[in-house]
Amino acid sequence: MKLSKKLVFNTIKIVVVLYCGIGIAIYYTQDKWLLHPVKIPADKVFKFSHSFQEINIPINKTDTMNLIRCMPMNDTVAKGAVIYFHGNAGNVETEEKYIAIFLAQHYEVWMPDYPGFGKSTGEISEKKLHEQAYQVKRMVNNYFPDEKIILYGKSFGAGIAANLATSSNVKKLVLEAPYYSIPDLFSSYLPIYPMQSMIHFKLPVGAYLDDVQCPVAIFDGTTEKAISRKDALRFEKHLKDQDQLIFLQNGKQNENRNSSLYQSSITTLLQ
Image (cartoon, rainbow, N blue to C red; front, side, top):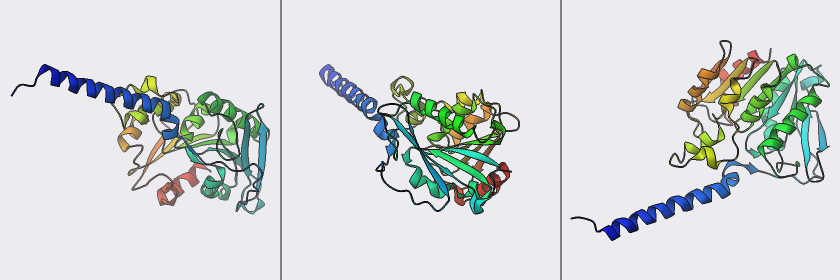
């Protein structure tokens, strides 16, 4: 039975309307899909399990960057600093429980909150993320030279850490559950849309790695849902001979730290 031209036309029209409608919705709500900040009142007093210093940096009339500087365990002398860029959710308070392994290896940990996260204020943008990351590193350089600094990027923070590593020869760049780029991440869910032109956050980790001179270590879990093993393997072509791509069996984001392979590997990297 042949379909009438009118029915075919109406069907195509419905498909086009749905496609355009969903595309428009993605474009205008993309930040809500990507970012899940948890704000903290400016007057709240942090209660961390480690010695720390809270730093507030006024950027302009509307923007303030809040960060914490955690000290090594047992008040030992720090042998370096880890600049830690957390993921797309929560804030420095929710992330603090994950940094003990660095403190135990006698590193300070400097962890900033992004605009709109925690106590940091202002509208978030890719440009601001990079500018504020550079500002944090300049502060850390007052205490440690580049060869004693490790840049650590977890998930969303991978793009920030990798970009920062392109302009300095730090000791190491460590990425946990990184994405290839933000548009690629969206494309893995909705490949029928031109995400490269739709998504305004780019953070192309793969491209950044081509310009990173320091040693790189990438941790990824084999059961990571948002970032598949296939995607992680795309990084291989960007890695140097001394770089490492480490797969954690049955590892998932926020659970990678429980892996014995992660713990032994990160301890070696922090030597």
